[in-house]
Amino acid sequence: MIKLLAMARGLAKVSALAAAAVALASCSGGGGGGVSMTPPAPPTGVAYFGNVFAADFNASPNSVPAAVNPGDIIPVSLANYPQSLN
View 1 (tube, rainbow, N blue to C red):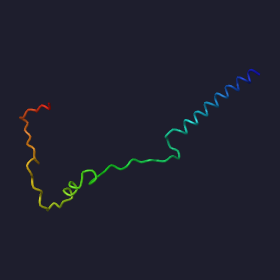
View 2: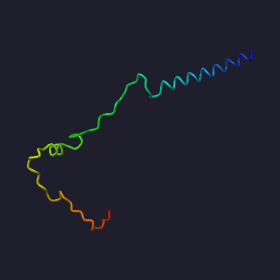
View 3: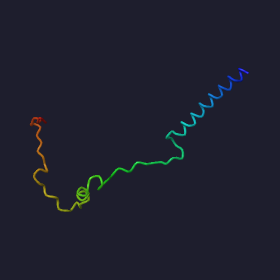
View 4: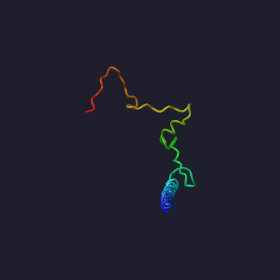
């Protein structure tokens, strides 16, 4: 009788462990019939660089070039010392 009681307790523990394993496996995010979400595509072209860039980029090679304004070209010299950012 004692041996039968010990076997029943062991079976109850194994059953509880199996039930917990099944419950955890069903909650995991892998596979299954859940809803699949894909990330949105990264922006390209006009959405990323803007309308002005798109117009300049798509301009005809034979079109009149844009005028250069003061400040468009920044002079760089290797002889200059770095400025402090304080």
